[in-house]
Length: 93
Length: 172
Image (tube, rainbow over all chains, first blue to last red; front, side, top):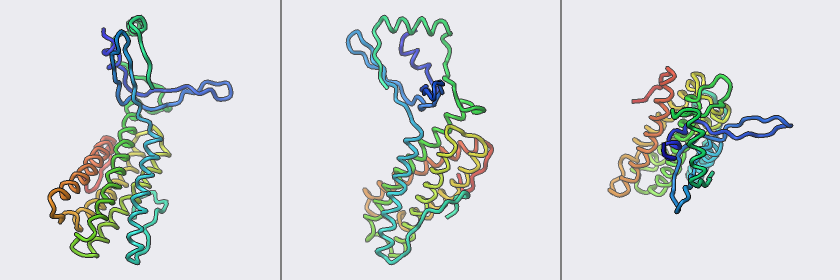
């Protein structure tokens, strides 16, 4: 079996282990999004790209907020009240 | 994350895998009571959410740059209001997903389904209030590409919600 076959079989969730007060606690770091393989002479380099959920959520929130801020600037120019974010479990606006 | 492997290390990996069998391996250690499939689905929803936010921001920027090309000030503000409400719901959905990390089950899908109902509705309003009347071919193509990007990501989320037996109104 080639090394690439081994890597192609690695899927699912990648974990890290944090030490919390002397106890090892498994923490999900992310899922394996992509495994890249590069040959450099006799050396094989593997790069594992992780999809990290928490970072993606923060990035999404930043982009949504930036978009909303631009819209509210336009509304202010037109004399309209801003559209605001309210804690709403049903998702209605 | 990056590591290097010499031929010897590759042989070690081969031997280690050989001991456990050369079958498809799924790394577990998921939250209690959550399957690895559910974890993977949560990440797909989160990834699609980020794609939507990115395209939504670009669409907002483009719509604002096309202010003078809207049929009327009213249609322009209606379009922006719909995009703004899409952002609000996106923020709400994002905040909710943070409270259920790596967990895609029916309650989560039901909640996200509710957000998707609103996202689809606001996207439809934004589309038909003036953006669909852009005449310049290049600009029209840019608008359509962003709208399609959002729709595609929303449809992915819809399919994952429906996989939990939850209905999403307004989904095609």
